[in-house]
Length: 151
Figure 1 (cartoon, rainbow, N blue to C red):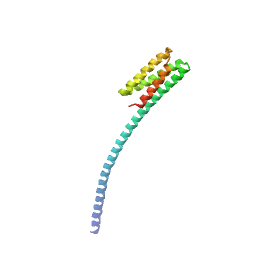
Figure 2: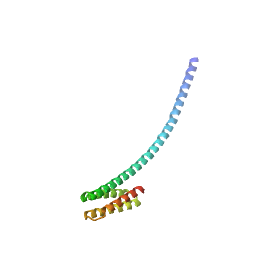
Figure 3: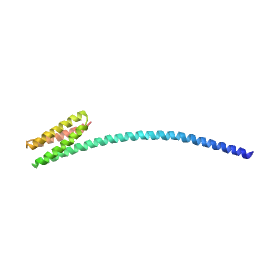
Figure 4: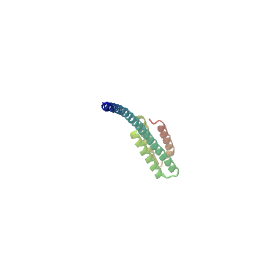
């Protein structure tokens, strides 16, 4: 009878250990699922923030490229190299117009105005009119203003 009692106690302990293991396994999975869900939400938020920051950096880079093109155009005008000045002004206008397509309403009007002014300046360079360098300098300042007030 002692062997039967030991077997029943052993089977009871085994069943209890199985039940405890099963319960811990189920509840631990709930915790893991909640943890994975919270990590997924955090990752989504961080990814969205990185995407927004990348967009801002690309806009700033494009503005900087347009500003550099205007500086090169001023230098070309100082050297009486009108063809290069026209090319640089056209490049700056393209960059500005590309930015204007994706910008918000307030910024879009400012960028569109700068783009149109650049197209007019290109015509003035072709016609060899005076004052183009000063207008380029003013437009570069307007670009700086737009960059500071960007959305």
